[in-house]
Image (cartoon, rainbow, N blue to C red; front, top):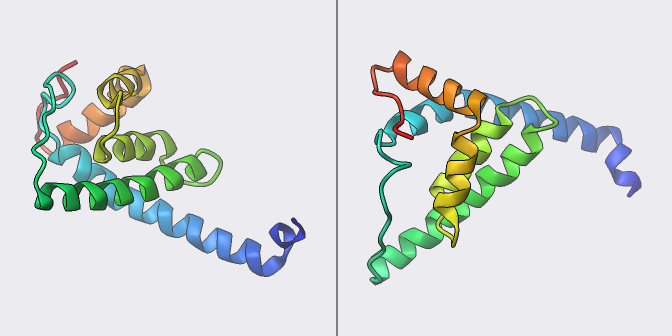
Length: 127
C-alpha cells in the first residue's frame, strides 16, 4: 500500500488524470451529440450474430474503461458524472435503461447534456 504515496506513482496518476480530463473535454460533447434525441424514450433490441456479439464485447470494454475513468474523475479533474453516464450508455447490461434514466433526470446532468446539444445545433433529449 505504500506504493500509492511514492512520488513516481503520484506523478503518473496526475498525468493519467489530466489525460482523461482533456479526452473527456473533447469526447463527451461528440458522444452526447451523436445520440438521437429520443435515446432515453425508445426501447432497445439485439440481434445475436457473430458481428453483433463482437461489437458488444468491444462496446462493453470501451464502456468499462470510461466507467473507471468517470469514477476516478469524481475525485480527480474531469467531468465524472457525465463520463459515467456516457459509459453506461455505451455498455449493454440488464437494467441499463432504468439506470440511464435515473442519471439523466438529475437536474444538473440533463441541463448540461442539453446545453452541449444546443451548442451543436441538436435538439434536447426527450425525457
